Image (tube, rainbow, N blue to C red; front, side):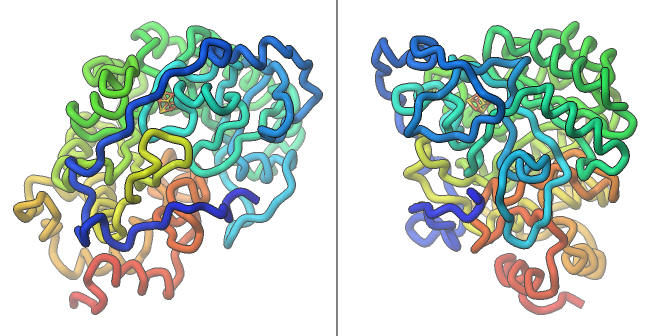
Length: 419
Ligand code: SF4
């Protein structure tokens, strides 16, 4: 199972030069190289044009079949194990509660985000369907098989939510609609609600409205970078990628108007060069307009333009993870928090006894994402080991136990109880 990856990248207990955070200056992505003409736009896959035979398990030693959405979708290894189309076991988890479906095309994603395993520059070395993404392989499965399997489980389905991840591709808007329609024609969205992880670059307000009208429950925007400067460096001009900060906010505001409070939100990646203040400040802005924040820890994805950079040091990560939970679910406000000269949190702005209870509950340190059937602050989308190896967990895909909490407290620099 791919969650126990044999990777070279060590998780950081501290950052480069002994720093306990990843500063902007060192988090510079590599520039994308030149792609040979005969590797562009999925040319090898289209040239061989191999007909797919059912489920495709990523294997870059064989010719990749020609698969396209909406007939095919990819899904995380965890989702494929839970759906029963891949064999494997996950460390300390029996299954995942979110069926995350990723649109797939031989041309792949046409954006070039520096931290992402799916980025366009990788067409020089690996076919799209074989690329690692958030540390794992993504098997490709016929959409009919997905729907048949989930529909046959009915109310007994292990999945609490389905999510369609759009990518930057000219057909992405249309095919998201097709995948959503296929799902809702067989599966009641009241039983398994649907989230959309959108691609604002190709979308307008009417696309957002259409997804809502077709039964989508939650709409999210993967802002990923916490500031406009960092966004441009990692997802825009800096890496020959088409995304624009203002466009992402425009679509987020459309989602606020159309999906309404608590039904829209953003994805953010901590530790790419922003300060802790930057991160908590942007999350406060999202909460102030009625949305939620789903945050992940930066991990240097093999093959990405940031694979030479340090993972987020654990103490930086734990501070923003705790800050996010306080802002999203406990009524805390960045205005009342205190920060040092490097923008690191020095006080969370709530009474010590309250903070103590929240730390001990462990909820703040679980994977963040759209809710499932357990509680509003427990994500269905638990993405096991998407942002760290199991040996040093960043986002816990399960409730942390006493030993985990002890480790978290040490990482936060508060090993002893506050009260
Ligand atoms: S748009 Fe999304 S899938 Fe495409 S490269 Fe950027 S982060 Fe990856």
